Length: 158
Image (cartoon, rainbow, N blue to C red; front, side, top):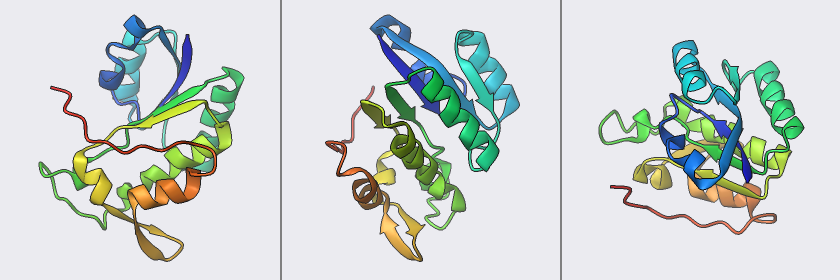
């Protein structure tokens, strides 16, 4: 059984079928309290850490809980509204940099596997990294290439 940490968990949509696949979501993080409560309703076995993962206190708590639970898989579903054609497609929106916390968590926990799910434009969105603009896929490769075999794909989930 895989033991998961779910980042930017929202209301459990990404995890809907995971129980059927022998996947146990042990730790989750969500910013908004109402979403976290709904998540807890559907995943009462998960340790939900609710609040802003960009704060050191919450980030450290999420990492500590995931290590304690021996999570071997991280799934991150960073918010995508500002890189979606259904929204603004604003590459300068600071929320695009939430990917940094997902990558930091992978580097700190060192899971066997990780998955980052987002809209197709995620692959063509830039973030600020050390005072320069870099595509998100280039940032991920730069940070994780030594420890992981990285694949980018656009999947049709319909």
